[in-house]
Length: 245
Image (cartoon, rainbow, N blue to C red; front, side, top):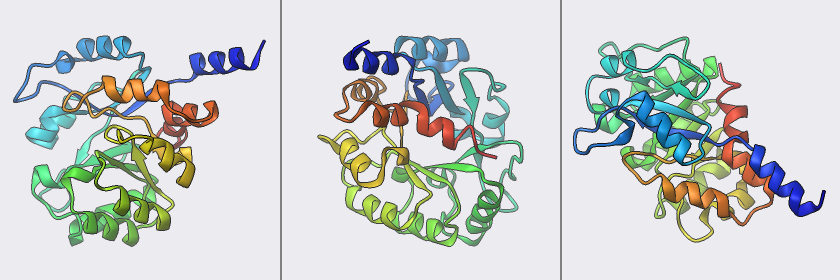
């Protein structure tokens, strides 16, 4: 088998894991991923093997209701509960290896004392924590990461303009990771992979709120060695998320 054929074979067997996906109806749009069968059809269409999903009711409504509506873990859909800290919050799901924080949507301070206490619990438990950069203040993200350097924090929705602040954070916090959902600038993913290592990047789409075909096409066309592309596609997620807990 030639080197080219070896690369093609490796690409064909690399699992694709979307770490940033929503399941459920949206209050402002009709989407095919409103229920599990619809989401699975979308994953098939985009050749995505596994998705870590939060429920839209947990994002736009009561997190307790949305978390209760999550599907049971199976081979393709992995439930991600949304947590709210403090005595009026959700409590911590001790069985969950991956959780998400949505401070902007639910009106609590990311750098407040209840949030820092929750972060300490999550870090001690080895729980991977997803956090939307677009829904938090950058300085508060840095404060949270500095307060709990062992917290395995995956930042989503970082976008183009946050590159400098994000690079500064990754320089000093080894357990901060980034999803690719909005890293759509020219060679932006390649730059982060070469500077910080491909293991710090996880494929994500942010769908259906953000486009899924763009990140998926980008994954296929990354100008990186195949081992690095395989890490971003799913290898990093398998190591970090499925090894969590």
